[in-house]
Length: 120
Image (tube, rainbow, N blue to C red; front, side, top):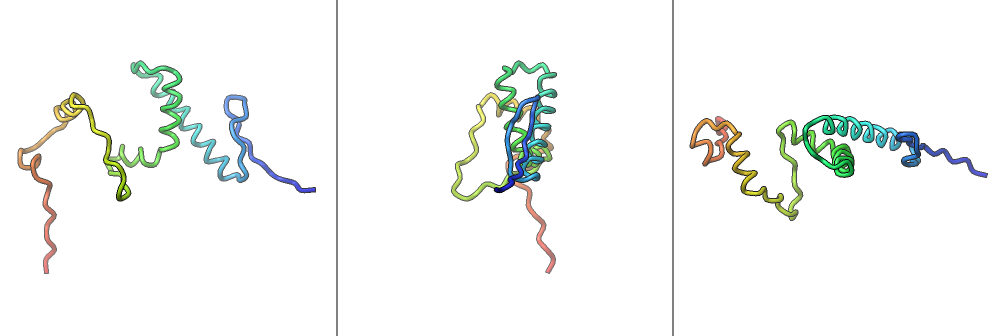
């Protein structure tokens, strides 16, 4: 007879998932905790988001917290070669974003900053 240890994550009083390792179970539990906190944060705002959409959104954000964190810190995500280009932002959103950014000069808007050359 074999004895198998399983780790069960219980969320809101019901069994959510079963894992073979404690590490996987704890990672899933942490992700659910993050999703719960995101839900509470977004639910408290004045955004009008349907409950099921908010559930899906917060779960997605918790599952992808590393790349979202990189974006929120101002970083860029590395895209694999041959992948599809990022989705186009609607024209009204681009205008809105452009008007909210602080721009110092016309030169910085049209040309990318040049890197200084190393002294030889």
